[in-house]
Length: 484
Image 1 (cartoon, rainbow, N blue to C red):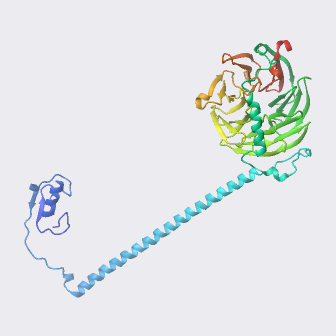
Image 2: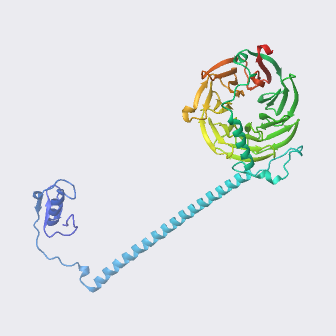
Image 3: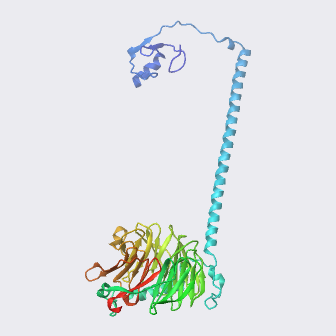
């Protein structure tokens, strides 16, 4: 019999009535005093539950194997052999563990090297993309930069001279903005309310995608790769520019120059019908163009998640910024110190023109199709894909409070705010509308709505006409009844 606690033959053996287990008396009594339970079964146990076992006092002889020196030596040899075998097994396990550890460390090192190589290749690809030389048209001797190496410069902020130009324009335009009065010759609400179609013409531009209006001329671009320059005074197309790529946006610059962007990532400048400057800084569709109010900086945004600023005077790129979403449309603030870009994810991002840093984000909720800043300096309108309203945001507010108004215009594909900041024109499948903000009563009204569908709209001189283009390429001029 062996004690269940010590594992040795007890000198005073006792047995538990409840489990029949044998214990050394002094050990089990001490355990019961401390715990009150049986160590084997965990049941409650008292001293009365222990029964002593009577055993004969007999001196146990040594095992026969340990009665002689040769037997002891043999026992020692067996124990040594066991220890040697155990040591060998431990050494084998240690060697296998070292091999597994070495393999794991090698795999980890290889993974780190692959990550480092991929990171280096990504950085090299970004650097190479940022240094792509701007392609130029053959007929550009007058505007060609004297140093081609300068065209590969990629700066994170505008050059000092352009930054100073942005500051000067901002100060000059914002100085009297709050005090600026509506020009006397400007269209009145009654004029807008009496708008009727004054002229219409079918252009040779199929699937029109862009419209720019300046003075008495309109430039209409299409997905077939041509731009029609239309004389509003003469009522006919006077020139056709062959772009050769689907046109996505169009701008007038100076008196005779037209700027177009394409779905292949190009931006072209045409002068009197000839392509004089070409930029190819986008790796994908150019979503929109915008001209800085100072007239020297052109901006483009693209599906490659980048916005690019160009200096038109030297025909070079001066700033590029990458974002986290494809960019669909853009607009400069009327003072020029801020730049807005709409995203395919439904946000409008506001950037600093001088540094390219993101200054604010406004949430629209659907892919942004059009943006237009008000001349009051703190509002902008945004239209989302599939939305039945146009949202008015206040730059001075944040979060949900920044969306100060939703105008029920129907889905808007194009937006245009007039110079006075009173009238917001919208074009969409449900027709043309003009939304008016009445400053004296701080209320909105809708003085004009037409049921003729349009995809593009711009204001004419003195807000006394609307120039719109339909999906079929039909151009219409809407003006007050008395001017027909």
